[in-house]
Each structure stands twice: as structure tokens, then as C-alpha cells.
Image 1 (tube, rainbow, N blue to C red):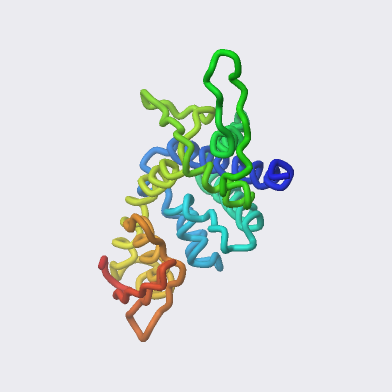
Image 2: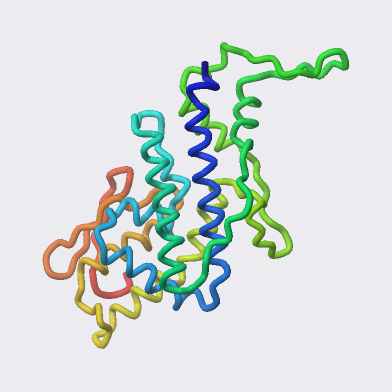
Amino acid sequence: MVNVLADHTIELTEDYVRELVYTNTQIQLLQSRDVRLIPVIRKFVVGDTPMAKLSYLFAAPAKAIPDESNGNYEERLQQCIDLQIELQTVITTLLGVSATKKGRPRGLVRTAMRNLCCTRDTTEERKTPTCDATKPFINSASSLVRTAMRKLGWKRPTGGSTDVDTPYGLYELEENRKSLFRDAIKLFILSASRPTHEHYGDCNLMCRLKGVNRSILQLDSFVTKAEVVGSNQCRLTDNHGNTTVVNCIGDD
């Protein structure tokens, strides 16, 4: 029963990881990323993309996967997949670099799930896995998939390889994404803080940029809401409900 219930969730989860790999690899192909990514960032930040999705997009893809209390698990995963594909399309359109999509890394989550749900008899006479229905993960397909994702020990590429057939761990992908956008976000904030810049004085844009920047810098949280308060203040709220107020203009 669990295999039937979880099958679509597993497929979506692996699709999400695949698109993260493709997007990161696409960005790694860019020269002078700190400068060239600014038009891509602007495309999303000046639009109507919600602040939480900006954080998922540029800083925290691992945290985009909801916990068990969220009843829209598969819907959220599909939104995250769509968002990655949209980012790939914008990079291709604005910068002329396409995402190289080869192979479909599959089976990784299913293997991890089997390892969580089953025990293996290591005797010579019997080496087939035996499922243990008493294990708590079996009660929730989404919980099982999410736990499997955390348990996966995927390897980083070695020797500077950008081969998309080499799987990453989900949190490694998050750190990679942060490193790819960190300098571009910082440069955009510094540039837009200058009086001669076209976006100087745009508090809404600056507030959202600072929300993304804080999501990149924080290890265990990400910004879900960015609100302009008064003439030059920005109130940032993270996924734990913590609030920070910063100036819109400037690099604080």
C-alpha cells in the first residue's frame, strides 16, 4: 500500500532534485556570474513572485520541501519543479545559456525508502530484504519520502565535473545554489544603493533583495515575507516567525 501511495510523491521528489541539478549546472556554465545573474534576479524580484518562493529559488531549495503537517506536499513539490524550470528558461532567454538535460536520475529515493522500511538478513542462506511493518515511517508516504531524502548520502562530483548524471544530496544542492547567487545578490544590493543606479530608492525591490540575501546567509531559516515599513525600513519575517528590521537603502 505504501508503495502505491508514495509512487507519485517519489517521482515528483526525484524530478525536483533532477531540476535542481540541471539549474545549478546551467548556472555554473556562466562566466562572471556575479554580474551576469543580476538581470535574472531582477526578472523575479521586480515581479510578483512571493518572497518565500524567491528564497526557495535563490537560497533554500532543500527547505522548499514541506513537512508532514502541510497537506499540499505534492502540490508544493510540483510548484518547486515549475519554478526551477522557469528559472532555467529565464537564464536561457536572457543569457543564452541552456540547461543541459541528459539522463533522469531515478531510483535513489526508492532505494533509500527500502533501506528505511526493511531489514536485510546477512546470512549466506538469505540475503533478500524483509519489510518490517512496525517501522513508524510506513504510516505516512510523505514522511517516508522526506526521511529517505534526508538519509541519502549522494556524492559530490569530483575533479570539477559538472556532469548532471552525478547526483547531489539535497542539502548540498542548497549550499551550491547559495554559493552561485551569493555574490550576485550582494553586488545588486550595493549597486542599487548608489544614487546613480536605475533602482535607487525602490524600497520594495531593495527589501525583497535583502530578504533573499538573508535567506542565503542563514543556515536554518529563510525569509518568507518582506514588507516596506515607513520611508526607508524593511521588515523581514522568516519561516519561524522571527522578525528583523533593516534599512531599505544601504548594505545592512
